Structures are given as C-alpha cells and as structure tokens.
Image 1 (cartoon, rainbow, N blue to C red):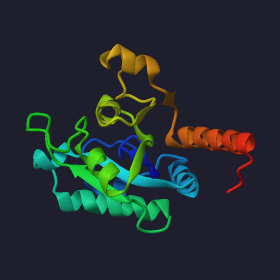
Image 2 (cartoon, rainbow, N blue to C red; image 1 turned 60 degrees about the horizontal axis):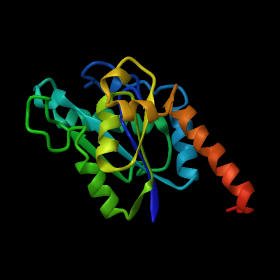
Image 3 (cartoon, helix red, strand yellow; image 1 turned 135 degrees about the vertical axis):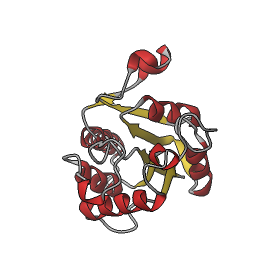
Length: 190
C-alpha cells in the first residue's frame, strides 16, 4: 500500500490571495518546494485538493485555476507530473457539496485508485474545511497556523488531537524525523 499527502493550495503551498485567478500573482510560500521535494523522496504520493468557489461565483473560470496551478508547479520546479491527482472543487458553500471540502469524496476516490493506506495518509491545510475533509475520509489531518484555522470551531476531540505546524516544510521535516527514528530502531536504511 502507498502513502500520500493531500495538500490544500492557498495558504499551504502558495500565499492565499483572495480569489486568485492571475498566474502572475502566484507566490510560493517559503519552503514549500523543498517540502514537496522531501516528501517525494520519502515516498509520498502528492495530491492537490483545493476549493475554488470563485468558479461557482463566476469570478473566474476553471481554465484560470488550471493556469494558476500550472504556474505554481513551474515555480516549484520538480519533476512532472508533480501531483498524482488534483481536485479543484468549484462549488460555493451555498451549492450542493460534491467535492468541496469538507467532503471526503476526492480523498476516498484516490485511496481506492492508488491503493493508499489511510493510516499513512495526511491532509495538510490552513482551514477547518481541510481538517474536516481528512477526518471525514479517515486520514490524518494536519493544520497549518494561519488566519483561516479556527480550532475553537472544530469538534473538541478533533481540535485537541490536531497537530499544528507553522508551514508545510515544518510538517515534512517532522515526517523526516519520524522516518529517521524508525530507521534507527529497525536498522532500515532504504
């Protein structure tokens, strides 16, 4: 079975710019590219999972989001395809929820399609909807401290158990530490 990281886009990989539609405004969060490089080296499949209600609100098109995502992957500068799967959820919060986080639909589909072990899968994001998508899918949620994460609005048992990191790189470095400890305990060097 495979392991994976499901990553939010805005506020996790790139700076959150309200309803971003211009690829020229894409800015990587410091350390994001390094985090992805390390995660891939550790054997994690990487999935992009982003709510983009600006599509449903007619602020921009799906094509605009794809252009932003393309620019983001260019700036990251790693092997292509970088993402094993991408979900761009266009629904607004007022519309019926299909893929919009906190729906677990995309995660559950990818677990099945890519033979993922839910116990070795994480969702990383800076909003409560990211956290609850992971909880709803039965994978491990990881919060990033930021303006959108509201621990007081999460179910208490989720908030109390939620690991929160300053950045994606901080979290991935924690994964490295865990791998190093596991290797030294087992003698594994691969």
